[in-house]
Image 1 (tube, rainbow, N blue to C red):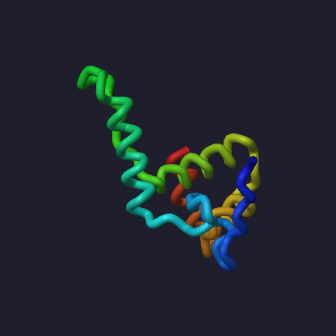
Image 2: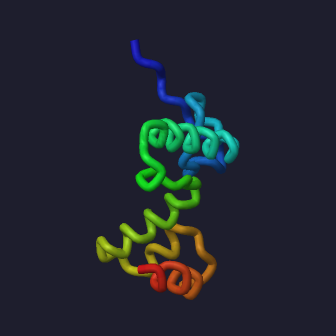
Amino acid sequence: MSRPKAKPLIGFEDVLFVSRNGWPLCDQTVIDAMDKIVNEINYSRDEGEKFQRVSPHCFRHTFATRCFEAGIPPKTVQVLLGHATLDMTMNTFILMY
């Protein structure tokens, strides 16, 4: 029997990391989970082949980069990222891309 899908809390509908009940996860919980995965990957690797630690914020940069690669207009990317100005989006991501 499948578990009914939890409804997100009002105001937190767009949160990426949530519990099974739909509650936003504490940022440290996500960081710890990601660190555990990287540590498991690195357990049997040589020093030069180990993955670097990543943070949840990396997903924002990956998302923005993929948007630009897909040809999504910068103004749309700005809105999706919640930036106040187009300059912020362009100065942050176009220089990286």
